[in-house]
Image (cartoon, rainbow over all chains, first blue to last red; front, top):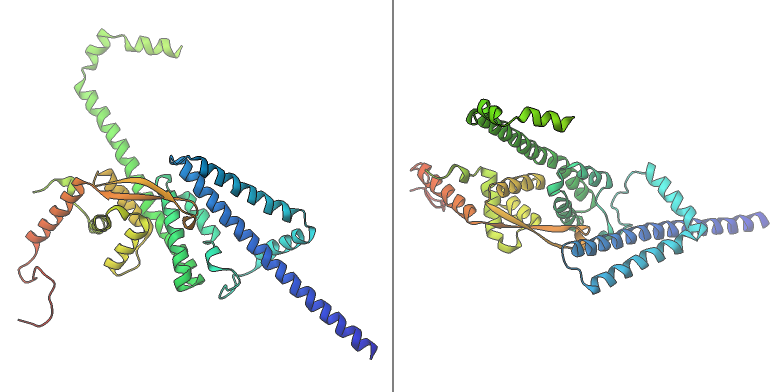
Length: 212
Length: 115
């Protein structure tokens, strides 16, 4: 009788421990997502200040946000249990496939695929920021309407399709610029009477002096 | 014949029309949605930006930085506006289409029923 009671007590305790572990795991994930959200708001305020909306209210908002981020980070970095769970969660995520359905994370906190987002940093600088913002905006809508998998698939497709048009644009522009410079050089070579210029102005002598 | 700088390719015309229709609300997302709705297929937002960049280089549209929102990851919007040469380019495209349209294609969309 005794082993059965002890066994059942151990079983109950272990299941409780597992439940607690998964609850903490979810909290760690939510904390991470909340920090991401705060970081986005921070970037948003910083951008608006950079674009000329530098008011005292905005600076105070930034200070408040930073204080909140630091408080959350400090509160969790001092807790060894949370740190251990965070470490386990990060290690598991390295080897885990994305979960089907994705119901564990609230949709408004879901992020676009990280690797695809990093790939966007290799696009030409001129259009990058607004393109990334637009893609994130459409991604958040698709996430609500069509679900996580389709939204992620759309994001990946867009990233891969963005390379060819944007880079070919940039390359074509560079080629046109160099062609214009070369053409102008050749035209100047024909129009300007260089023999006469060399006779009047000792250009070679000046260049030699500058170099020496 | 019209100015060569005002000649528009199919993509450029579509994007320019979307910008003209959207007025002051023309940034990447509504332009993408309008093009997708008009073309009836999945568009590439990168291709739309490349087209807008070309149009801007030719002076057909102008752009300015808008506000940043948290839904966009704190990134600023880039608004586009059609300029006078852009309007002229659209007019020229319409004229060209009128000139080149064969007689057996009616000017308005057919409403069904053979004559």
